[in-house]
Image (tube, rainbow, N blue to C red; front, side, top):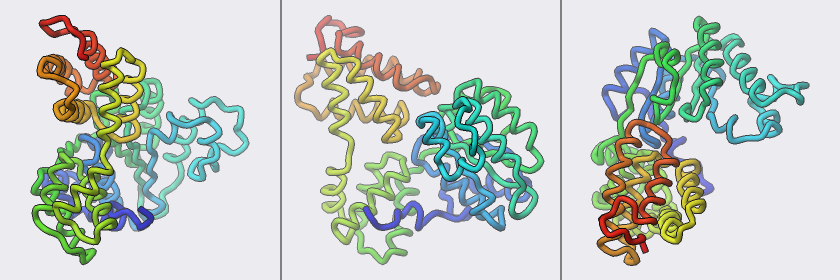
Length: 345
């Protein structure tokens, strides 16, 4: 889509956030700035909520809100970090600096400069579950040193990955997945603002298919409107069938069934890293696709469901999703956990 994304053009104000508890907790942070941990599944609106808070809090949010996605550091080379226009001013002339030192310097410098308006600025660390413990210790020291002039907001889908000293310095703001009705309400507001024709069954289809991922629902609705100039059940079904990740999910299942565990692991890792799935969401999607795939018989599905039940608790506790889902697929392929000792295929 070449048009501006609706997630940007229809970004909510603080008062528009669909969850009353989130509105209340963030509303208190406007007048009494505090460090926060926004925790919840991918796509539920954590980043949108932080931006709404910043617009309410800062006179100059464009300059006093600093957003750093952890992937900006840990998934990039030193050259890519150094050439990022947000960071190059801090790293000029430091080409020999180790990557770890580069990251620490960007954090310190971002926290140390004076706010453009008011008495403090806000630094958001998104996808913080990917920060290694040694970097979290460095972050803790920066938070302590600059607590008077910098508010830290940490957004994560796995708060258990944060070290206790950081969690103890932040107020937790749980952001749950929105209900289907809440998602429909958000979509209705956007479609009416865009003067787009829609039908209620189309809205319900998009909202239900998103499974609590509000970002996915909004972008699916926009893709449908771009392609069909309206949002109906039929239009949404046609568009979303082209946009889904079912092919990648099938590839993960097939790789495991063929004994290619490395391929299965890569497919799982790509779905988590690139498509934003959390562990439990990806588990549900794998089960859905396996159920619909005619290659797998009843015994295969029963074995897969038994194994899924065993790893679901581990995923709920926030441990490494790629490891647990790869183990699930490996055990399924070799017949482990089943009663007949056969392979999945």
